[in-house]
Length: 525
Image (cartoon, rainbow, N blue to C red; front, side, top):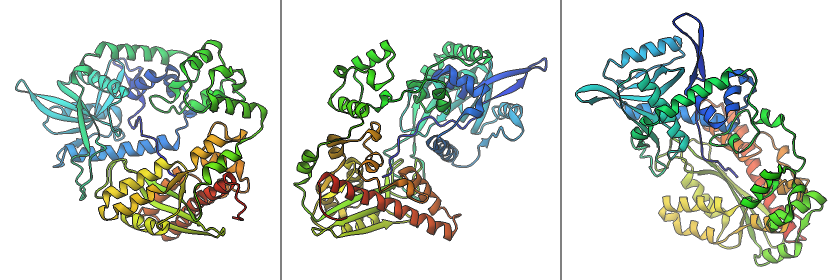
């Protein structure tokens, strides 16, 4: 069941450098990324400079870097369709050469990509610089390109830094805009990405924040100059506005709760947050029941007593209305910031695989699967095969119905001739997740009702860890991308195909087993 969180900060610029001053001594110059690291957390900045080896970027963060590069490549096509612009690569010749080439190109009249600026102890590289006329003289318009689908607050900080450094280094900057992906845009095919990006002008705001940016630079240098890392406790800043690669290190410096508060499901009330902060509470046992809702109290009780909560009668009553034969369905999807298939949108979740188990009245279990690794758009063939696999009647069980039903609605919109049959499937969908959430909780779940948390508790003989290669949705997406790559050898592609089939089949068989446990079925499945 592939799920992707929205991509956040994609930093793919240099992290900083020692440059020589006029006397020849080393002078640290902080990159824009380090200034933004300071804005997130002073400790992060210090670690970025002094202990970079401690940084552990997650696969999601690494994927965001890749996306950033892809969007950057498209931006060069969009802003320089005739290919007359110049790309500056600081890796060729170093920083000094990059700054010198930037200054030379600023005297010409062509788009510049990755132009480098340095001023007041900081440096930055601009995604796009476009020549314009201002009062009859040559000036420049800067565009920062982001892979997100909207303008974030930290993008505004980014633009303020870029504008300040460019203007402080003498660039006649006429304006600055932030370009982000338009998620409603539909790719027309043929390599035409002219509508992928939409601009937001941030000139007035960015230009007005010069004093603020100067203070960030001064404070950042002060942090970096410290011999010891700042003392900062882990908290919300560790994941906002973007994931920090030093989280594991910082967390390891703190006493670890035996039964942490983040196991509590749902949002914590303001009263609970205030109590936790005021009393330094970190263990579930120390949270007053009066500050918890019913489900949170249940999780606390099960965690402390070690006794599983299972309301079998209520679970059975809820499922008894859905008669056999029944179907159990799961999808795997892929999404691209830069669409590769005609008729698709940026970040649209496109299903490339499904598994459907059918359970008859007598307990006979059959499975059908679909998987397209051709590299072409799998959507229509997927939709047709799904309609056939699910038949015309009988409940269709899923785990987290919002995901699969949304994908089916997307397919119905894209393929009108299949719309009626596809939407009819949605009418039959029954969600097992609410059944699990309301009627079952095991101490091992640690606040989660994901199928991978519930399955080992109810069905210990089944384990995703026993699968070869692909064991979760993120790995399924990575495997799909590898499989459709022209560079992937046939033998490896065949191996990936089997791994994907095995993974998705376990997802639906797991639902069969959960259904059997919740419905108190005597069927041998």
